[in-house]
Every structure is written in structure tokens, then in C-alpha cells.
Image (tube, rainbow, N blue to C red; front, side, top):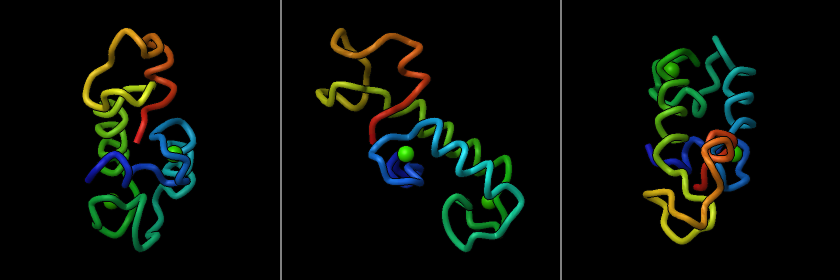
Length: 84
Ligand SMILES: [Ca+2]
Ligand SMILES: [Ca+2]
């Protein structure tokens, strides 16, 4: 799964709105994302998949998607969103 798969509402970022979308679907079988592992319901493994992608792509200025650099916002902003 790429970070873009975790971008549930399609704003180009994996962030809090995607997390809230996952929570809204918790325990259901949406037939696709946010059931990322395809086991038929949205649960903890899907949350962990979203979280893994949230942490992996955390560059905010678009210059380097793999690592944060001096042009990126601080840790609080990295927690608020990650680019897709
Ligand atoms: Ca998003
Ligand atoms: Ca699942």
C-alpha cells in the first residue's frame, strides 16, 4: 500500500481527516478502503496500515517525500498531516 491509498478523502495528504474517515467506517465492510487488508471489516490492522503510511511520507514542502528536511514544518505539523 502506498501513502496515496491511505488518502481516503483524496486531498493529497494522509492526515487526520483520513483517520476520521477510517473511524467512521470502523467495524463495517466497505468493500474497499479503508479496509486496507481486505479482511472484510475495518479494524485495528487497517488503522495500523494508515498510521504506517502517515509516518512514512512526511515531507511538507514537496522537495523530498522520504525524509523531512529544513524546509519542512516541525514535528507537530508532521503529526498533523503527511504528503501523498
Ligand atoms: Ca487525506
Ligand atoms: Ca480490514
